[in-house]
Image 1 (cartoon, helix red, strand yellow):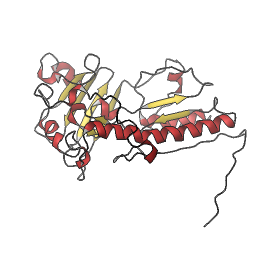
Image 2 (tube, one colour; image 1 turned 120 degrees about the horizontal axis):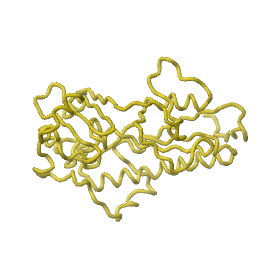
Image 3 (cartoon, one colour; image 1 turned 60 degrees about the vertical axis):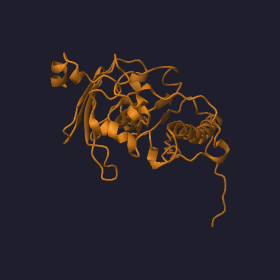
Image 4 (tube, one colour; image 1 turned 90 degrees about the horizontal axis):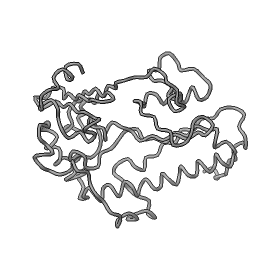
Length: 274
């Protein structure tokens, strides 16, 4: 075995540097670090309104959705465990506390090197996650809590703190954004776009719709193949190969996706266009 030794990075790098750090602490099943175990047990908890197993919550919704409550991707038996949804969620948050510590260490290192303000730091997940919304946990569906990823960025030399980008930035845009931040051009074979101009308040051409696709996996037979088109306002969801209800939502007026407009009348042309 080689002895462990500390490696001191240069105090002021003369060439661009790139660091990719991937944590798996909040990949289920969630196992908090011992010092954080049960640290949030007494905190108040309120589940989402769409979690309740009521006829109103499942009106005009696909049959598989209610059935999945009893699967290992449902709130009744999350990952086939004996945890209730509150404990399941809190264990996730307790596990995330270790990630917070790690990120703080990285930021302190950048500050000690004197490059914190000129370094583009991107903090994000690879997918959204549900904790009871529509009676589900996990991801693999087209509801916003599944497909929207948490993402924060920091670089005082490039944009102001507190800036909010409302345009539809996608995970395929991360590569081109990092490449452009390093002064390089996006390769022609990459589909994404550099979204730094959006953070800087520039009015640039941008996508106005996003295609979501999930293909059925034999390891998760309870989740069907999903095709969905999401615009700034509407989302149309189709379940390929299922004789079941498709879904249409007005995301401006119904951000929790509770009223399926395909069965309320008056939206046939919008659905046809999508």
